[in-house]
Length: 142
Picture 1: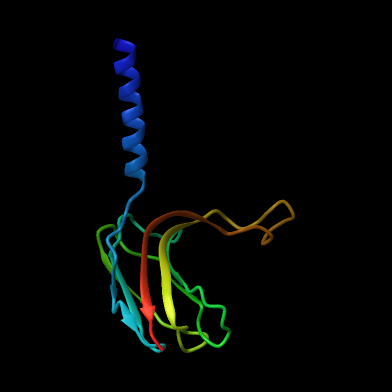
Picture 2: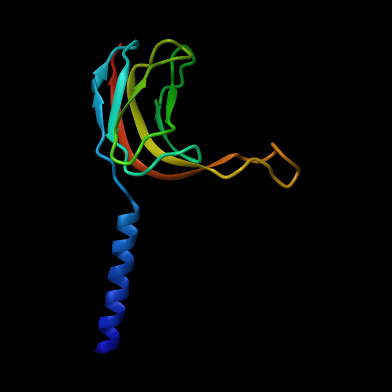
């Protein structure tokens, strides 16, 4: 019986640790619906200290395959103290307008790992993607 209690305690401890490692951010998107030229603001409170070696990437992607409108866009939050509210503005920089439809977004941790691979400097990745902290969406109407 004592062994069973010990095993259950270890399993519960692992589950709590695993769930605690996935920090879900509360995200607000304004507006939730816009036009092809709307600037969308993604707001959230940073849950960890961000420095030059660790940052957050806010990215949206549309299922559209059109080439005359912005199918994806991203912005980086490179510095913010833990607990600071940030507002990230997403706008269609390259094509100057969003594609009609629903954009799905993520907020993900990225971390610098150094540049260089087995073939020398500047041949490998300089960063690695970490966990997704939040998901969000907005809609664009024609």
